[in-house]
Image: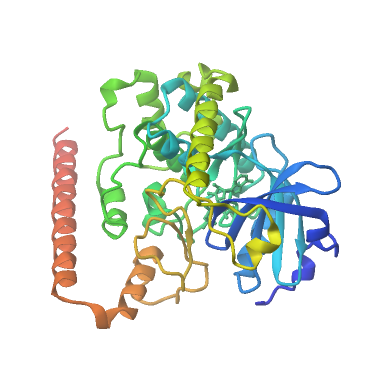
Length: 414
Ligand SMILES: Nc1ncnc2c1ncn2[C@@H]1O[C@H](COP(=O)(O)OP(=O)(O)OP(=O)(O)O)[C@@H](O)[C@H]1O
């Protein structure tokens, strides 16, 4: 079980199966599955994340300790943790789905008023988090959940960080590459505005259904993020000036120039945001699509578990749902990250200090280490793609060099 004793994590010694009846599985993360459940004492419906004993206890412990301390209407409520002898049960407030699940199931992006509302609630939650000296580090539509009444809840604090009173910056390379700020992929010190960059990428994701540059391999993307101009909406002209400007303020490449969450709450795009009723139609549409998918699956004999014991015995067929365009799972060293679309987490201390590798982003070192493991499998195609990547990065850097030289010459002549 690692260095942490499960007894330090749990709320009480009660057997969770006597407290909660697990119902359908509603999600799956890298550490375990999430179930809808009902409290046998209060009849309240809740969400239960089941984490197997061989999980990464250090990270689980961190998530629980952070969740325990948070109390905000925009952050998922934590109800407690229990141990059933083999799995840790983390009991939380139940949501309908994530924003990525919504967009995916509906098959289209949100409209501008809905995005303004989701962004406002996200910023309120993050302002609270940041004022408590915490950084989320994995903001994306997959980690923004919503309830049936349209309320928004930030979730997945598995990779969040607590900033010490004296240290307001972090260096550990954590996040999902498509949503990562330039200073994070460059391995520089970063602060709470790293979350703001991810908010800007999420706004684009909610409008366009995918984050920008989603067709680029994450390995190449980490070179591109610091060099290329800030991303914009795919068709900026289809959206208001206020929305385009909001995204530009979130996606300032220089963290010093980037607006904070508190500043963004005063932005005209957010000031004009409607109330949660704006989500009602989308939520109803989602529930209807889910119900018809369930009916179709039942007709074709595809079923979901309604009983915890059958589920844990392995007889359950996972809840069918639309295929995720992105694997929203957290990728930790030792986990397979074949597509690289998940959260990347390189715990501090895993990277040797004071060697010539230090200047490389930790994320890149991790990818390279993974590649070395698979060296035997490398073939000419792989090497050709690598060459292609290197050439494209050289071309980008040359372009950047030209721009900087031009700027120097302009300033010298001024
Ligand atoms: N409280 C909740 N209410 C409703 N659904 C939830 C809740 N918590 C999680 N889920 C669903 O379960 C899925 C898995 O959640 P989990 O936090 O375990 O992993 P993840 O964030 O998707 O991935 P990872 O932990 O690998 O980053 C989520 O994508 C979400 O759709």
